[in-house]
Length: 154
Image (cartoon, rainbow, N blue to C red; front, side):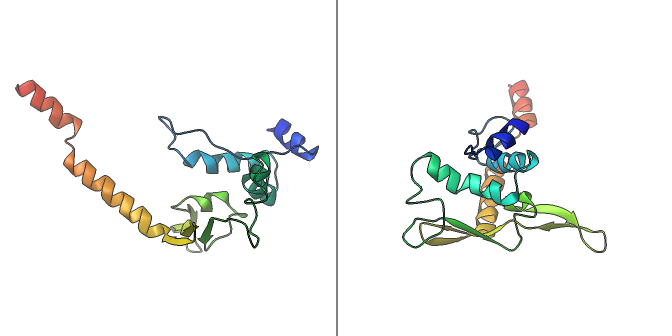
């Protein structure tokens, strides 16, 4: 981490990226973890966001089309009610948990809307839709215990 921060401090371009999903990490969720690691390495929160946007666009030679929000550029965006510069966990679709003034655990942050190719998506509704699909699939799929009992009975 110290090396990456020093590399950045000496003028190196650091970009954010994530591996594809694997057994203990779903595809896409590693990206926010990558941002958190850059922050932990000593990057200022704005440097973290820049590594995920402008620096990445420059690295692939597309900074004239993407990477910043400007007239004439392509831009997909997220809208949220919390500041991810304060806590990068707010970028997760479900946000983060914290204690409120009365010491109750509450969930804050999370993406409210995603704008992709000019279409506005309600992120909370998308999460509900995915939950419904998963719940329906779970109901339709017998659990391992049922399958084991069925195989023993045969």
